[in-house]
Length: 402
Figure (cartoon, rainbow, N blue to C red):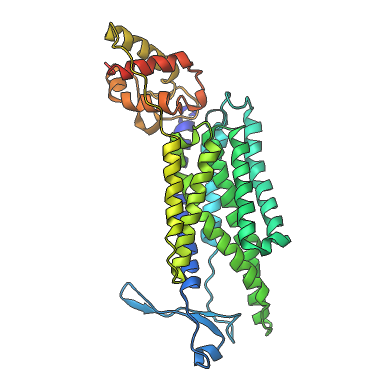
């Protein structure tokens, strides 16, 4: 039955990843909606019935064939509603499924997924310890800064937090593989986001509800603090969404300056998100998406692969291919085979196998991109492919991959 363990882990990976996407959509969707709602509501007319009831803003919307009239109270309504909807399980479920996925995909297979010996020769325990430690320290530092005088100055606080997250990315890319470093920056941001919900937003809401239940006017400070953390979470969303898909794009995390690439892309996400937040308030500031697009364009230009050096056609294409196939058999077949021998893999990644010459020819462009241009493969260079072997594959492909 031991041979079924990798297969079972593959199914666990699939199902938990699916759950993570579903709950993430629910959480981020709620975040986007409520920030839009806060920015879009308009105050009622002075002296109107709504104003007398303590409503600070309202709006009308139409969706799905019905009209909606959300209202926000300055502090709280006169009476506690019998049925009150809470928004917390989306956040908890997203984080829990994310940690489960991190454990299945990375911690159970740390040698392949987290360690790049050309970066740092770590043990599996050390790599996992660095990953977990980053989440704990990251949340602690963020929360302390929020509670410090700096937390009262939104712009300065945002700059400092961005700098600290960038510093974390720099540190992680110098001890873990690029792919693992990126995913742990994402896990760090996700942990901060769920920490805000668990440790401050929901407790603050509970205190407000408890005050109303006891017949007291709730302290507005709880709502103000919750709103601040909720806005922080809103600006984190686009960077963390990029990181969730980044493992498909080795050109970013395998770059020599992967931490800087990530910083630019995260900054672009923040500027774009800021544009939408302002637009909800009726302000159209096109400079912000322009800055975001400019940052993305700058990254695309900066990390573009160099033009390949022209190589003379091989005197004997069959002999050249035989050498390339020998390299692929030695360095790639452990994972990319009908029956992988690398622990942790039940099937060839993305279904790409190199058992036969036809399969190698069919995937020549993919091999070139992953082995030569981005050097993303072999994964963490587990099989110790040499630069000479990469050059051999490059010469074969650039000569026509015959």
